[in-house]
Image 1 (cartoon, rainbow, N blue to C red):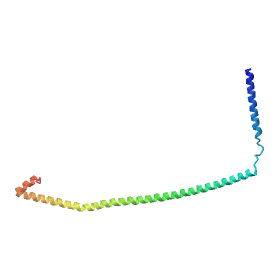
Image 2: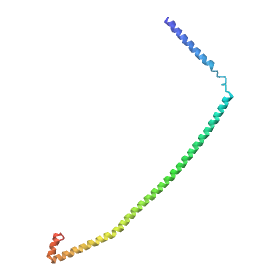
Image 3: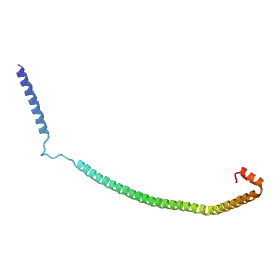
Image 4: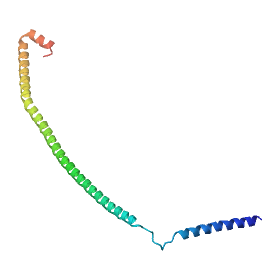
Length: 150
């Protein structure tokens, strides 16, 4: 009994499967053309024309964007050149200023160094004169010793 039920279930399933595939093949006849109306064909033509128009507009937009990028690249190159020129001028100015400061310092210090040497020579002369006079004047010799001049 169980095997008969099993057989019946398989038979029913096979029939349903057979009927389902038969109905699918009956509805789809590949040899028959799809029935288009004149309005459908007009719509398709308008869609194709609209698509071509959109493609043309997109191409024009891309060309405009490319021109903008080219102009932007040119501006960046000009700015780059200007900045290099500006940095060059700035550094040249800084180095010339440093050179001027060093030169001016040397020329400004030269008289002060010369005056310092003159004062050192005068100090040495005064010191020798006092030491010579201290040989004859004992009070001056005592003062010079307390000041550690002798």
